[in-house]
Image (cartoon, rainbow over all chains, first blue to last red):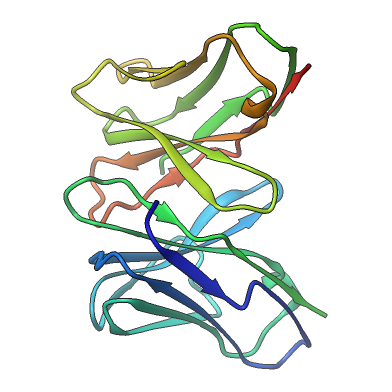
Length: 112
Length: 114
């Protein structure tokens, strides 16, 4: 399995506070992704990156920003958390050749 | 917009049975289709990936088929075991998207009873 870690694994925060989730991969994968998983919606793509400093929006990007300053790290920031952003967040990475995505263990975020 | 549907949402069968999970997608213009497994509280693990030019892929007791023209895929699990209990998700990569964007179904929660 690809080495993908996410931190923190659990977080509880209050509405209006900024939150940053970190994804770290040790596979030198070019592509990295952030998804959220919600009951009734499945997994939805928030943002993705196709290289250092190269990012693009996914299906549900409003309220989220990302940064990738190094190949191994992909950060997801909620500038001002809202209760609708309570979810489980998954990071994934992959190479351009195989099309397989490798997923991290997830971060459970609760916004009160 | 591509949509992926998995029916049923949940399935419970006795150990040893062969079973089929279904996945349908609305736009046949796909690059590939993947089946993932998700255990409670864990991330997703890729099981099988079928390219659009392929009809099926096999891995051990798992066999996935793809009928692109009808917008359907099935995951066949032979001789089911309690360890197969998990949620199984289907995902397609739309043919007009780059960067491996995936569109997921909502999954089928499978329970294998000893």
